[in-house]
Length: 157
Ligand code: THU
Image (cartoon, rainbow, N blue to C red; front, side, top):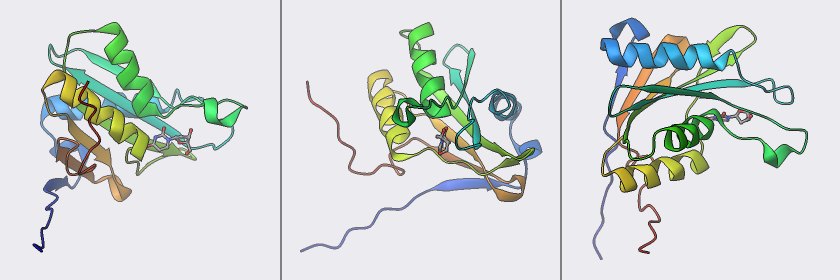
């Protein structure tokens, strides 16, 4: 028997202002997108923005439906939209933010969204940098989804 350990390596920034210009822009676009969410049932608005390898930005917000399971998270709206609109282009980064009662708030991709990130990373052969807005305006930056979804299921088709 061997005991093994996983280390989650990430950075935290005190505010959006501390990010490099391209990442700041990505988070700002996610913040803008959050205001366009359709979330009448949970009233929890989420915005996401994806950066493509050529610099293009694609945004998404959560979309809910009265038939509850039909709704979709902001992250998947953004990633599916990015893949559909720009087939063949890798996704290099994604920013995520919540927006609740007029204030930006913490948001971090759910398990299903992490699985989708993992598959696009595998398909594109490129890690995605994830920026999450945290309480107090701090920003968490993680390179690649691997540490967020260890021992990932990857079909060998
Ligand atoms: N949601 C997202 O869009 N992204 C997340 O990271 C977590 C949850 C959405 C789903 C639902 O519309 C609402 O937030 C409340 O869970």
